[in-house]
Length: 617
Image (cartoon, rainbow, N blue to C red; front, side):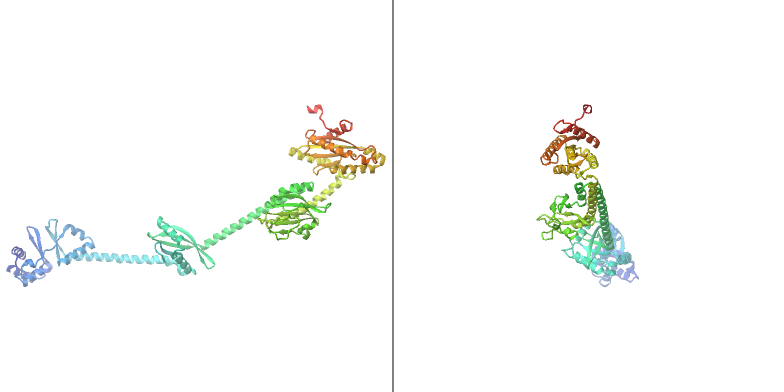
């Protein structure tokens, strides 16, 4: 208190007095005085006026008692209570307090309120101890964080090194790629090549477009994206699937997994599926072809004549060879040429008749295929200027060449090689079927033909009439029947013998046969009676045909008078389907009734059947 009072008086007078100097000397002599108090506060009316540093003050008072106190003491910046609460709680605030102590050379700072009224002092030791404690805690936290970080880093590195994927850090703004340590990079035989290729691609502006685009898209969407790509390793192709995850606004983590085994398995599975589909398609095609071949065999067996078979063949052969044109030729013994009996397609390239020497397949005895182009060895029966593909296949039955199967395509099509196996099978079926059909026809000619007139007999006429009636009823077409009586032949037989009547009958048949079409049938129904079947013929047309035939036979009288002095008279009765009957028996009976009326002298020798009044009703 003595020193404080002396200080107050000194501030009031401006100079140190002897009592103050004496008090200072005594204070410095006190033991541990600096530890008890580090400064003196100068107060006036409870207001802080200044702080005197004791070491400087006491040294000055002890050595220079006459020096003014004001030149020694200095005003000190106190600390407000509100600032103390903020600064003491943080390391930065404690460092600010230490700086305030250091700048003013103080061991203690006064604490005042907002009106600068003293509230106490803050020793430097307290601040230093708090700071040291905080720094120690912070250092401990940092050491713990560093230890945890090192542990996490070791775990992460171990995970990366054990990862069987390739991990890259990719920057989209700079040509920067960082390779993470992975098992692929360290163990794989091709790891180095893969990494080099990927780094070269990612850092090459001319090749990295799609890769960087995927990375930018992942950054834009801020979510992971997947991308499949392949790399070439010599002659092999390695496939990868990459998961791209954004790590910042300009970089991503690129995790690439090798999926080459999966891709090879998928490719093998796809190839197996393609092969399986091809086998199934081939099997279905073979089944369809076998069905069509069965239809062809059944059709040929049901045909009664080669002409009928020729009309029926196109429907089946077009299905067997859908993108080809073609035709079937049959050898004609009477003319010594091969004649066309069946044809289909719009690009048929062969003449309708040709000799044996005009076909290379017939001359060589095996198939002859010609590819597209004008310089190939073509058969002479092909049209001049035809340059498409063609195939000639001989038809052989019972050891003999019976005909020819000819296929052709447009110049821009190449299909013959595809159809050649089927053409071989069809040729075998056709050869056997045509051979059997010819044998049946020869047998029918023997059993169903009249030997004297070389005409169909009554049995054949009745069978043919029944079949034609079924066809006409199905097609809703008419059919007419002419019953022809040749008068005068019986008289000639009585006068000149049976040979004369046979000769006259043959002359009549020869004259009639030249005026009968292939669809019509002429046969011998009685000894001197003939029947002519006229499919697709109305009754009016049948009457006109009957008149022409009567006139045709009448012109024979002059040359046959020596054999038939009374001439050859002709009477014709006509019946028509469906007006006069719907069965073969009805038509034959009613044609015979009309013939009886014609032979009775009614009309001009040609009488169509007329229904009785009871039938009309």
